[in-house]
Image 1 (cartoon, helix red, strand yellow):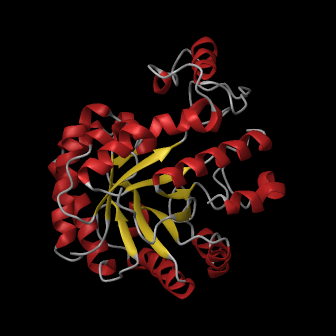
Image 2 (cartoon, one colour):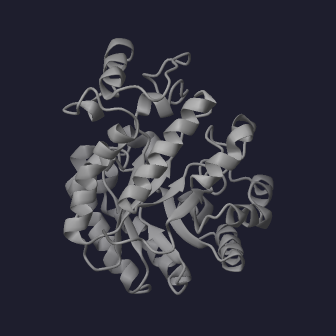
Length: 341
């Protein structure tokens, strides 16, 4: 499978220019050049930078130059630290993965689609000349029923970006929150600088145990790793109404650990190989409510699978957001986790 050169071991800067208050004090202090120095010292070769549209444009869609200044800073820092960078549009006008149930009109509303395209016009004009920056079109399309519409929009966006950035790598993900199971539904690559992106948080009931933002997840729910695929499926069905069990249907119930994770990758790897497209994991991680030994075991197994298939990736997250590598929860194993990027 083709490798995504320069984007093999990375980390997300979530919570800075996205999913935050976007207030000046936060923007000035949450991430600084010292953080990029630290990331480079971990052996990472890139960062993924999530950005919300509200940083970059007014409610009416007019550009906010001061917002672009923060991306410019990260570009300069990455340049000095010899880090590549993925510019990830995390939310756009009319669409947010967090409010997807209220965003159904996004894919049918010409005004919103053109605004999305214009934003990528500006981003690609401004950053397309940097050979160390790649573009991630839109974070986590949720509804599987809009796969056709999303593919059409992605193809249009690639054409617009190519007017300003003919050689930039462009990342396209599938539906169901960018699930590895929907890589097969991504459009055939429109050119040879396309990357198929996915996010990986399986078993979800382990990596997101007790997550307050999941309506079907009890706050006191806890589960360890590794268990077998059958055990995770049974626990999900008996305690969580089966909401997160679908990923294990059809899998060998006895599969566990690295074997279980590897099996979940096989279809996507086959698709990427057949289309000669690099495969990239834009997010993976374990919530800080999980016990540390289990989290470390999961990271070791997933790292082995990434290495087995030659897949580039970016850990979620550098700090905060309930997943932070540098937070107190992972203090005693931070060095081990950094070695597993």
